[in-house]
Length: 146
Image 1 (cartoon, rainbow, N blue to C red):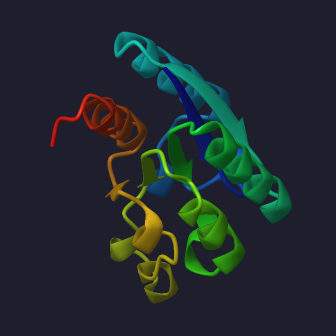
Image 2 (image 1 turned 120 degrees about the horizontal axis):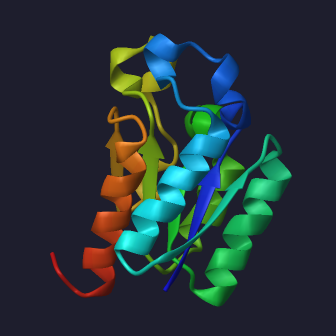
């Protein structure tokens, strides 16, 4: 089973971000971690990153059209992109929102997610393990386990 793992703005530059918030992993290391975690569950992860709202919407449309489950870390788009929210709402397969950090423990503007309302669930604050936990959750959802 293919899973689309989408990452929003600035995640491609994790090595330059505050390691106290995002950890010591760079984006290439995160991609390897996600792919390996998926393989352990029998999943093929197509990991993508973009700083472009248009590209993220296009990828969500692709997932909707092809009925591909999605794990999405919308990054800053989390808090204001209604266009990404609307595209995510078109995805009929499982869609899980993830965050490396815990937005609720950060600045107040990060406490609002416009994506959460259309996601099957949100996993945040566990660093790279947020993605692994989302892969486990999607596996269960696809097998009908609640």
